[in-house]
Each structure stands twice: as C-alpha cells, then as structure tokens.
Length: 166
Image 1 (cartoon, one colour):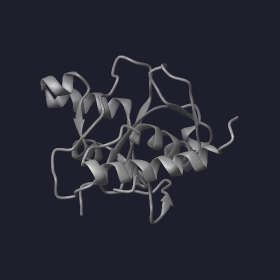
Image 2 (tube, one colour):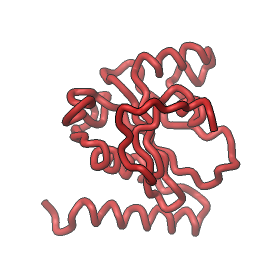
Image 3 (cartoon, helix red, strand yellow):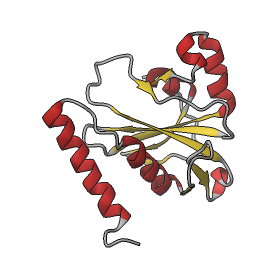
Image 4 (cartoon, rainbow, N blue to C red):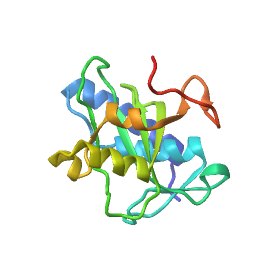
C-alpha cells in the first residue's frame, strides 16, 4: 500500500479532472476509474483485476455474485443531447451494467443498473452499426435501466421506480 489512501487519491483525481476540463475544454480520461471506485463504495461491490470482461462483483444482498461492467459519464451540459456511454463488451462474461452519472466536479449524481438481457435487447432493437459495436446513448440506457442510487437518497432498494415519467 502506498503513502496515500485510495479515498484521497480519488478525491485529488476528481479535482484534477475538473480543473483540466475547465482549463482546456477537454476531458481527462479518469472518469472510468472514478466511477469504478464510486460504484464499489456506494453499492457494496468488490473491484476485480481486469481484463475479465467485467469490473466488479456484488458482495452482498441482491447483488451478491453479480458481475458488473461499470460505465461512467460526466454531464457538463444537461441541455446537450446525444451523450453516449462507453462501448459495452457484449462478447464478455457479465451479468449487468452500472452507469455512474457524474456532475462537472466528477462527483456521483446517480447510478443506473440494467441487466444483460435488457442491454442486449436494447442494442439488438437499435439495429445500427454503433449498436452492433456495443454503443448506446445515455438517454437510452436510462430508459431501460433502473435508478439504484442517487445523491439525495443514497441506495434505492426494492422500490417501484418509473423511468418513463418526469
């Protein structure tokens, strides 16, 4: 173990990524690692060494044993449409996908979860070259997923959540 705690390092990475984007207008490629850390900490997951086709495994409760791909998206402009999540590895062994949505300071705002079946069905339904490569918009993912954590309420358990109304 190094001199610095992982908590402190992630906190510094958040600050650096936000400052870099503010200074250059370009993203610093750390959001995936920050999202992995946040999802594991907030949802009780164990991170795994890559490459295994998934990023974490559920440790307890309803998530125990579930293998997750974890995707990240920092939202800088809510009005901007067409934001996409990273490529989903459909040929790898995983059970569900978590999307960690972060604010402009790279702090988690919400986490959405979708099962493998839901993700594969949505990609097949899209019938586009991007979908064939495992690409999906943030809006589409939110449409098929359920909210499992948000900044205001924390973890959301066994509630009926309507992702169709706003």
